[in-house]
Image 1 (tube, one colour):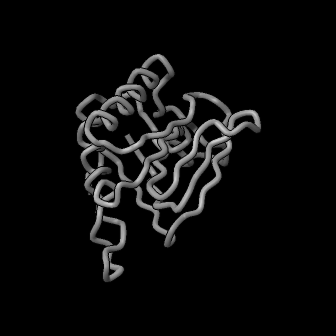
Image 2 (cartoon, rainbow, N blue to C red):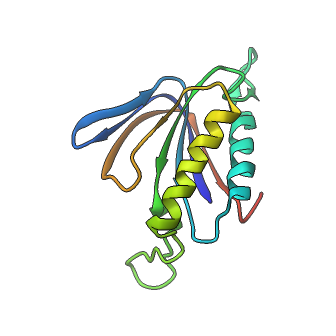
Length: 150
């Protein structure tokens, strides 16, 4: 699994020009699922996201997690995170999981993050054409890949 995490002051996801869901201060998690991902990837990633200390404390140092600030999380599926641009100019998405694999893992990710925290977790719709509006705070953007645990 590969995620792009953005610390935000607000975010909304629209589908067909209609507001689908939104959050206030917290994290936007763009979630890319590849065919080799497992529930172990979900567990590791959810723990990492919830513990990631990227919010400012009283001294404006990044020492607080989204849980410690009682933030919100917006999860949006994004298969394009597994784009390969190695050959030519048209990205290949061969590593991205097919829907029959990705949808159950996406749902399991949402279930895990909701059951592991008391935070409000908003979501997009898997496979939908979505428009995402956000105000990145900082800006702070973190990329995590469960296959390269850096």
